[in-house]
Length: 407
Image 1 (cartoon, rainbow, N blue to C red):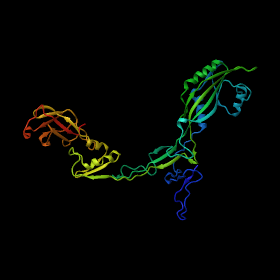
Image 2 (cartoon, one colour):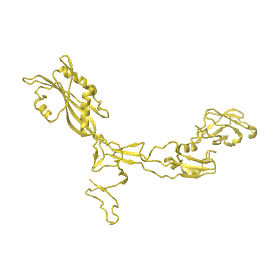
Image 3 (cartoon, helix red, strand yellow):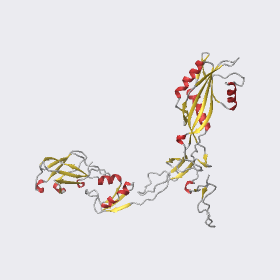
Image 4 (cartoon, rainbow, N blue to C red):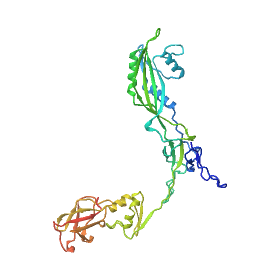
């Protein structure tokens, strides 16, 4: 496995640095930003072991399923044990278990772990080295660099953005663990009762609290043991497949939890100077149109004029350039209606003004002093024309178009 390479570590001797170690691949470059001390925090390093999976299965059987059988008119709790080396050797030789006094143990449930394999559909990309990106990120709201402040203290308008404390956790290993659950009873009726109690929990998450794993019950096999001079035993083998996760406290001689702080970024505002109000007409300044790519990429543009500054972002740009036509409906010789509502300005959250619309009669532009209209957020809208000043009246055959910022 390649080791970390420190760049320019010895500037006095100016010795050439080795590009590679014993690995044919280039060595990893050491990033000092990733080296943050953790002896001053209280965040626990997560750990998930094979023992945790074994414990979860046994705990679920004993405390959730709670298998019971009836013997001599009484309900008996069936004990659950794990088959260690000595016990499993007895099971293989004799086919059953005896206690310290030589008595047959029945009824009883014995768990035995058979195999553990990594899940093919959830394999990680680690190949001889840790790959950047195989981590999960958790952000902490409070940290020593971002202390709480009293509301009485005035906060400046240009407040510096404070860093966030971030913890990265390695992605765990997703594994499938195969178990055999061996059940011994004295009678077939007792065995049937236990199977009926266990079967409904197939595909459930077996475990306790946060230590749970999805468990599948496979094909069940039955067997009756008749030993000469011994009581008859009924045995059942229930294969279990458990979808588990494994994570050690350290991987590649490093802790699986690493501490980070968010990166501060200095950004420059793009400012354009305008002479008129951008919401004072239907004409969009060319400087704003030239900045469409910057705004579409998530940036903003600050427009300055004599009335102040306006921050133009995506919604504001869409409001400015989306000009549509609506056709007026003839009412009488000096009145028309428009069956549409005016748009809402995303900057000041007010309805678009009269200056943001242009009226054309038979293709001829009509000056705004020749009609009276206050755009509304409701429809229809009524426009009254000053026909005496215009010099003519409206006719039902006239084509009246209102171009502007409609909803």
